[in-house]
Image 1 (tube, rainbow, N blue to C red):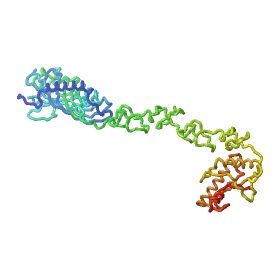
Image 2: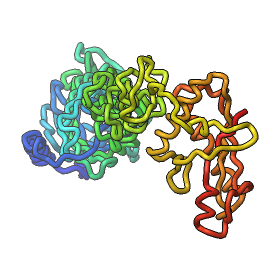
Image 3: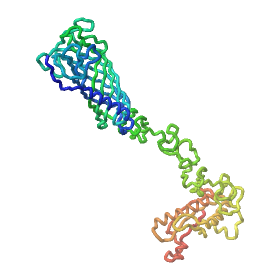
Length: 504
C-alpha cells in the first residue's frame, strides 16, 4: 500500500515541551499575579481540539490524529469545577507491515478509520484559582464508543461513518470491530486567564478503556489473528477556550465574587452596608457585637451610663435636657418652674431650709424669714399697710412692682412687694383680688393689651407661689385704655405703666 502523508507530523517534541511548560507552571503559580476570578457557582462553555492516539495494545499500530469537543462546566467552589464534555475524532492504522511501531507518526496508507465518540463527566481541581496561570488536575468517567470502518477510494471526513468491518479479538475469535468501553479519565493541564471570563486551556489526558479485547485499529482484518491491536487506553494533548458566564458567588450571599469584597464570607444582609459583600458584626463600630447590641446602627456613647446595651444615651436621666447641656446628667431636673434649664433638681428652690416637698411657699424671696411651712413669717401691718388692699370701688397701684423691659418677667425687687401683699392676703383668708395690668399708649393697642394681660398673670402666679390660692386671684389686662396721666410726657407714661389690685 502506498504511504499517504498526514497533516500531523511527529509530536514527541511537542509533548515534551508541553510537559516542561506544565511543570514550570506548577512551580510558579503561587507567584503569578492575583485577580478577582472565582468560579464558584458560575457556568462556562468551552470548545477544545487536539491530537490523540490509542495506546496500551499488543502492538503500536495507531497513528496520531485529530479530535475535537465541546464542554459545559459548573463551578462547585472557588477551587473545584465539574465538566460535562462530548468529544469525537478518529485514528488510523499507521503500520505498513506486521510488528512495525508507529510511535507519534501521523501517516497512514490503509483505508481503515477508527471513529471514536465519548461523553464524559470530569471533576477538576484548580490549584491557583486566583492566579493568571492556574495548574489543573482532573479525574472523570466516560463512555468511549468506537468502530473500525473501511473507506477504500473515498475521503470519509473528520468523523467517519459506515458499518464496522470484521476482524479478530484477543481470544482468537472473529468479531465485528466495534465496542463501547467504560472509561476512567486522568487529566493534567494549565488554565491561562486571557480575561476574567475567557480562559485558554492547555493540557493532556490519559484514559483507560476498561475491558476492551477487540482490535480497535483494524489491521487484523488484513493480517489475521496474530496482529490484533486491542488498545486499552487513549492519550491526548489538547488546546481549548472556555468562556465563563458569571463571576460566581463563593459564599452564596447573592453578591457575585467580582463585586464581593469578602467572597468567602457571606454578607449578613442586615440593612447596613449590604452591597460590599462583607458581614458587619458591629455595624456602628462601638465594640459591642450586633447580636448583643440593642441599637446596632447607633454607637454607644460610653459615658458610664448603661454602656453595656449598645445604645447611646443622649439624656441619661430622662429629664428632657440633653446631657451636653445638663449640669446634672445623672439626676433628673424636677421641672418645678424654678431654674429648670440647668438639668439639676432643686429640692429647695428658695433655699429657705424647707424642702420643696413640704414647702407651702417654695419661692419666697431670698433671705426671707419663714415659718415651718416655708412661708414668710407674718408681721403686723404697719400704719398704712391697709392701703395695699383697696376698696372695691377703686384700684390700688402696687408701687415697686416692675418688669424687665418689654416682657412679663418680674424684677427681683418686685418679689419683696408681692411678699407683703401675700402676707396681707393670708391674714384675711376671705379676701379676693383682681390684678389689673395697664400700659402706656406707646405702640400697638392690641399688643399693649396682650402685654398687660401677661404681666397681670405673672403677678398672680407669683402670689400663688407664695401660698395664695389661685381661686382668690383674677388677672386682667386693660392695656392702654385707662391712663392715670398724660401719655404725651415721659412722666405720664411711667405712671400709666402699672399693676393695680382691686378688692372683689
